Image 1 (cartoon, rainbow, N blue to C red):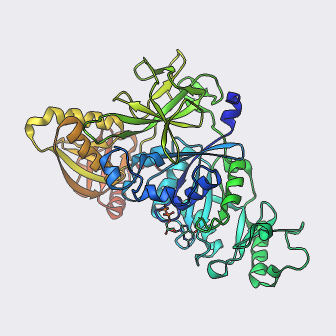
Image 2 (tube, rainbow, N blue to C red; image 1 turned 180 degrees about the vertical axis):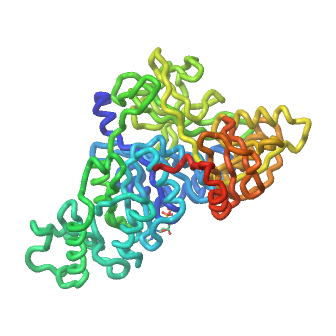
Image 3 (cartoon, rainbow, N blue to C red; image 1 turned 30 degrees about the vertical axis):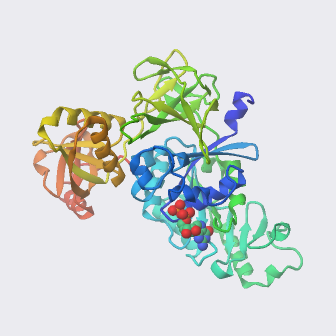
Length: 524
Ligand code: GDP
């Protein structure tokens, strides 16, 4: 292994955020192909559709055809070690998806050029914003007719509230897609043209010198005009602002035809940060320090009752992991040996011997870990910052089917809530239990784990989606609670209103302006 410092500096750890169908799987696959981590396009897809699901991972995930082996993918490219963390979408969207974003150093946001910013992109974007994570935007499917590029930039600013800097600009789109005008490398990259002729370099004015068929197209002239507009009225490029997450570099391309992907990857690697120092109770921890440390951001339960073991996903934040090393779990002060560990690769799970800050490893978990746990190799234990609270959107009322099982029911709920599998709320007077989640899958996992691990059948009554708002100062008149604005307490006894819909929320705010409500996921 190279020196620790060089190893850490070569890490780039990111997640792809997007709405389903924007092209995340396709882009991931193309990136892995560049890195030589997979041989055939279609491998990641096969995992997605379940053809690869062979192991005994949790039943629900199998049914849905997700394989845990694609949770984290690592590949080498141009001297970098790139870690891609998966953020599941569709019905599998859950708090885990959000938490994954606490384990990355940057995010790649894919936008379908015909659809613009969609619901799930917005949600994931907010979490990145909350964390100050740099965001790189890839506008996909330029081989199809989509929205005008200027309109897409306006959407970034208006819907997401982030300034952008287009690193390149499409010349036409759909059937008339000629390629991209690469502002950053001062060249044009032509679509569907052989590699030896694909690039046209530009002169100092940013134009093609001499004769070229490209110049005959009116799309070329239009692009030059738009570039002029961007140069004059657009944002300035700033590496610092990319790194602090206030400016997103924008790339256009087509993942399916592998167009613009390498250009994107090269710039991404150049500007995306390597692992950064993280705050802890012992101050900022330098990722290059010799002492190993990290935190658990996700626990994958095994639904097979014969195998209760789980995998805890650990983001290494400093130092080097070596198999068999002795570490301390800061929450309990207990020491233990990390003997069974797994690294996640594109093709298979394999045992990891060594890993450094920026990498993700899977730890065999017989029930030791909780989400947010810090693990350190030094004698002085410390804690990394608590993971943020995410606003649940779906709710169910829950109770034990068999009243004789109350004890098991309470124990199970306590533990699963503590582990971060689900959020618990209680109605104020009647003390009924409500569970809150970000995605439906969390309820299914909860139900299955209560059955398998605590031997309790639960009754779940859907309450549908609600808008949860916490209360500043936590002091509120309990009589304001109604069916359309239900007042409940979270597991820390903080009061929360669950509003039936946007309308109920606005109505409440109009009537009760003195009650200051907030959403923990909103950043000012
Ligand atoms: P995911 O749900 O975000 O993982 O999206 P996929 O990668 O599975 O892509 C969704 C659909 O869009 C698939 O049918 C892809 O073949 C298609 N797709 C992805 N990238 C492109 C692209 O650049 N151009 C076109 N025309 N289709 C694409």
